[in-house]
Image 1 (cartoon, one colour):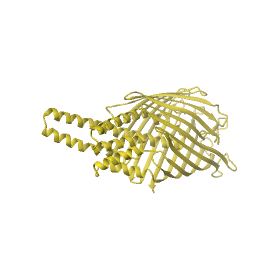
Image 2: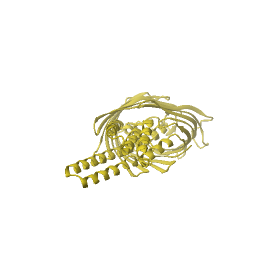
Image 3: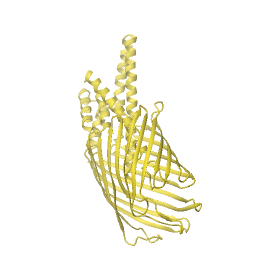
Image 4: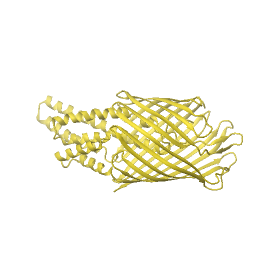
Length: 470
């Protein structure tokens, strides 16, 4: 089944540790001042102090949610780009709102600092905003100003440490596993069971946020059991060296490119289909991204292996296409109101096999609930021109940070396919855990089940262990 989200499976995130402390450490100071003033001044002055305290608290809560949103969003996009080279509308939803709110907070803090340039808490808060915006050098300068006014400002000290960590060498071990049961409506039973496991190791040098050069190696096994004959359609080994490079183009714009040289060989002699030698394809992606005040735009070009085997319904056999599927297109979003965003995308799909090329337009509207921070609902529609397939998608998502070093995202999707007359129920859980200063772990699990005209089901998981050192 096709997905409205372009991150269909088969088919640099901000540092997370102590993010809440960036602003939280600034608030107790102002709160104590407000309480002390209230005890020694007239009621009107005390009320003014309380109003200021409430306003600071609102700003703190907003920054917490924005940082959590950007961290979870960047982590999700990174995982999807690892597999498909494309980030879907659900991965980028909310960027326009987050950017707009950050710019508003930046202006507020700059205005307050003009009145009181010795306020170390506000300097640290401004540094936090600038860091989230990707203005790393300006953030460092703000943190250093905070330290000048208060050498013990913990938020600023942590910000400076994050700046230093962002220039380290990073070793990353990535693993993914997919299990899919392919249902054939024409015969009323499962046709095949697909499994793919992949692991890659990469070493990268970072010169700051979004400034990375990485080299890596990928190993993968691809296996499909034929449920009709009880044997194996194919069992393959996939290997590839790869290079990755990302860099800011100018303020608010960035680029990333990855190139892999993939080699496929028979893993053993159990497969009905044999390669008898090896086959090569060049895969990878080019991604350009821009974030503005109230809008965002992405351009993507992706070359990946065609994900679906070619099924011969006469024989009940499936052979894997070792051909390239190319996707070229753009996506964008605009803030319609403080809690509403409209997103859209258009992709042109080209296939190395005999499959017809096609266009895939999508549109999605998203809403965030002020009374339930971290919650989002989205309603989307997509169309595949060659297959005349209409996709309608409802997404509910919630982000949660129970501890400073631990973040979660829970997501549910209900999707209807008109061409297959089927419903897809899909659940997705993402966790990021900053174990210690230099070590972090990411885990994602996804399960989907179709009902109606098609009955495919799919389990998918991704994990990465990241260790940084000088």
